[in-house]
Image (cartoon, rainbow, N blue to C red):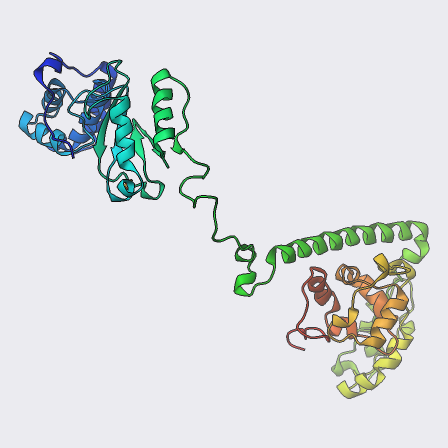
Length: 411
Ligand code: FES
């Protein structure tokens, strides 16, 4: 540790005054503190005075700071002599601070100091050309890159007598120099490169049981893209089919629906016919509307449903979804992963031209009705088991835990 004394009178300048720019800057610093606490700005002002004076604090600069802040000179001297960041002796254009604390000492700081003595001269003296001066200081916080020096505002680390001597020569002659480690490593990573945290599994989630999430996300995005493309293709195909067969695309005219007669008027033919006639088409005789029988019981409805389905007209071909003569890439999706679809239904779907989840994922209500009308023996399954919703999930790449699919909620 150096002795903290003011420089001898012989090197002290006779005057010091802040430049206009620095004076304005000092006012800004002082304004940060409450009235009566201007002394709080003493350290930044001393620092600026040191910069302006060429890297050290002449006595006149310390006094100028005291006047600026309304502080007794002695209070400012106490601060300037306490903190080693303030140089009380003139320094060279390149001021070298050599760390001499234990880690740097063990790694060769003595040899670095020897180079300073040889190339610059005694400690705290400026070289004859004014370019260099040096000082031994305590730990500068770069111990893992020991030995090291600070030159002005930069650190130079991993020094050897050879590379440090070359560094001083280059600084002296104005050649470009490399700051930081002087060996082949980045910052303070281990010599020879990093040797920890190299396992890629640490970054893809597999280390915590989340599998290769990057591949999974990629697959999901790809599946979503394909589903969107299939939807577009299906729309275009439907539009083309509708244009080619305009008659088939026209939805059948809805059958007239008779309104049930109120019980109070059920006794007379006239009483029943009058309200029913309201729903008949204009010009159609009221007698054309058949009287409506009371609704069948729930059981009766169930027993008749198959017969009714069979009697219902099949949706026109124009309502068909996008179908494929064969699976893309020669292999269809495992449709049995849709909960409720077994081998038989899968075969039936395949025979219709449905091979992939992304085909089902984009069915419209009309297309769903078209498919359902061809599910002989399984009518209503597609709606009941939510095939579209399940397929949208499956098309993203998601897979259920078992081979029969994931039972939809509430089923
Ligand atoms: S001991 Fe030299 S930087 Fe810490």
